[in-house]
Image (cartoon, rainbow, N blue to C red):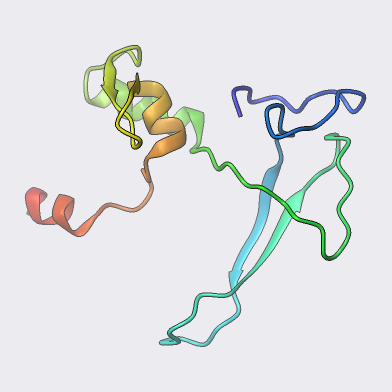
Length: 116
C-alpha cells in the first residue's frame, strides 16, 4: 500500500491497488507454550468497498504506525529520504523501510544485547 487513506468504495480493489484497513483484534488462540501460533484476527473493512465471506482469500501488507516511524527518524537524525538497503536486496528510502519492511515495535535480541 502506498497510501494511508482507504480508496473510495467505487475504486476497484486489486493486488496493485489494495484497500487500506485497520487491524482491530490480534489474539492468540493457542495455549501458552504451544508450538503453533494460531490467531483470531479482526480487520475493519468499513469504507473500503471490500466485502469478505468466510473462505475468501485475504492478502495482508502490514505497515507500521507513521507517527512512530517519524519519531524514530527524528531520534536517529534522518529525514526519511536517505537511501537504505531493502529486504529484497534493492534500495528504498529509510522512511519506506521503517514503514513497510522492518519490525519496529519489538526489539531483536541482538539490539537489546547491544544496548545493555
